[in-house]
Image (spheres, one colour):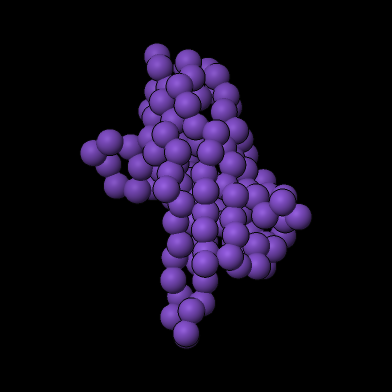
Length: 120
């Protein structure tokens, strides 16, 4: 079955860096775009960035442009989100997501999320 597992979150000071990973299984990773989302307390889930099947990051949220970089390693079935110059407002649970076609219907799969906390 499809499984997405995020890791790499934690507590970091403002200005610091973290690298999140999204390990995928149960589908053909190399032909699937991966999306990174985040959800801060009391706020709606926000799309951070999408990485295409050719490894291009598209649609970076304005709030992370120039600070976050998405990448993927297809042989490892893993996507990454490199986060630099972190700010307290980046505090959120970060999720990766993959869309699959199942019986003619697109289904979005999600990981369990990884908490990122940025202290001032």
